[in-house]
Length: 503
Image (tube, helix red, strand yellow):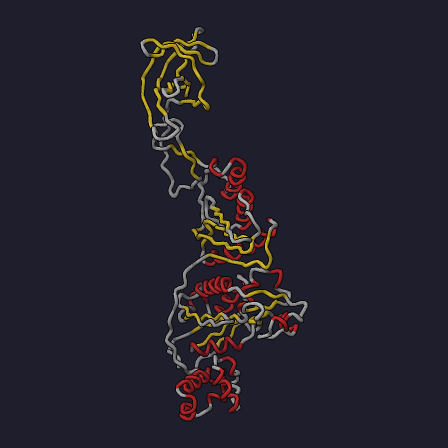
């Protein structure tokens, strides 16, 4: 029975274990691939692709039987990769409706969305279904879509459709007529009920729908009544929507350990394509990408790349990952690769008519990554002073883009100081414990004005103990040249140094 105004779209991806493995292995899609489930040597085929089916591979074949097909590629089943592919598929469905229900089974991904009232946003139901298939194909999943006013009828017809048919919209009040010609395989029958119906000669939903309800209930119980309602397109359903978490993550278990750096980047590039597509579907960009490598021997290696601005440029991300991994290579061959990303808002730059064109943030990130690989991780960024009186005390922080435009104030003239790095040693003559003269760069200066001293000391608990006496001096050479400077007296080492020159 269908509710008035109800409309459901069911997307059905068959042979899902095989599709989940092939979406990140584009080079194997044209070959015969079979996915094996179970522990060696007791393994059997749980999913396969079209070329493998044409080759003669069947479900349930054992490893010994499948070895007879020399051209078949065998892959072990990966539950983690299937979970990632299913999450990506549900994200595509969520773009058209927030109300979704997961009806997936062991070998298929099934998601039903409530699309009632979405015609003003996405057009007709047929147009919505075609757009949904296009989105799914972009993330490497081939599926079929059935749309009906009955929840269970949409699932049954989606199972029956081939991927070539694509989208089918069931007219209202004609569910029983259209379901009548479908085989019983579109229902999830228990082995006992399937055997009983086969012995009765029931092969289609139309034959099942024509059976008397009372007699069917007396023989199969309440399950018989439910099967008859399913066959007639009248089965009621309490829609229980799910709220899937938005997690940008792709995972691939490598068939053989990878030691070649170029091969590793090739696999990462395919995963980046999917992450960028999934983020773009939500009008988002990638703010940071973390690559985690599970190494041969049980170790792991993780690196995070975070540019100045979120971006969806594949070449940019691949270059940043390449430069980072070149500077921090893994210690062993790679067995498993996980790529996760943090979503961020797409950056937009609005320039004024007379505003100078700024460099592209992506090129700046690549340039900084190259410099970082040469001078070290902690030597690139902006210098930030520490909250201490210790001279030359600063730390390096990554460059960041301000979230708001700072107010431009009128420039004022200030006294500037040129810091000497490293400080120059001085020979100082004292009178009454105050500087009287000093020798700087082989020239002798007589002190005319001396301001100070100012004392600073600290870190007595560390080997880097510092205790300084600072003076600001105005001195004149014999030829009349004036020099204003800042000198320090290191009380711990008993030495004088020129710290900076005032202009």
